[in-house]
Image 1 (spheres, rainbow, N blue to C red):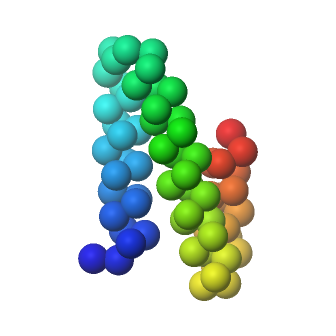
Image 2 (tube, one colour):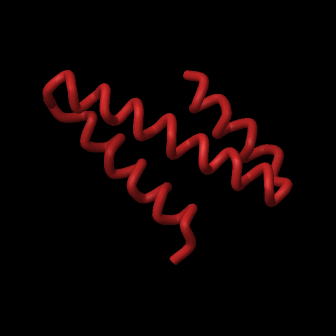
Length: 63
């Protein structure tokens, strides 16, 4: 399994869990993990010259 697929799967699971009532610290942890994960995905998209994906991931990082 590719590294990007694993990162996308982990981020998807974490963001779905955020729908439920969790402690505030969990949401802060998810924000930090999402920052790192989307940053890695943006870097990989840039390396593979996928400009549309790069823009989407950068917008997720900035948000």
